[in-house]
Image (cartoon, rainbow, N blue to C red):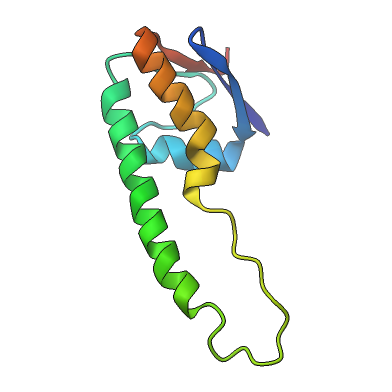
Length: 108
């Protein structure tokens, strides 16, 4: 199922339900049928999501260094897309909504 986030400050952001649930969980919100991130909640939400991206990047850097150890003769494995790439459109929306002092809605 696709979840669409809306705000007057940015284009709509659509994502799969499992990613929406994960990103909202990071910022302390639950994915319900409908919801809102108020303009007052945006600074904390941005801070939490940015911190999660930093942690993910650090963990991926450590993982990347050990990814191919002992894989002699194996084909190259792709490393999954990180949180920074997945969260970028949503984080950008949060920042723009904060700048414009608007809320973000979903399920409307």
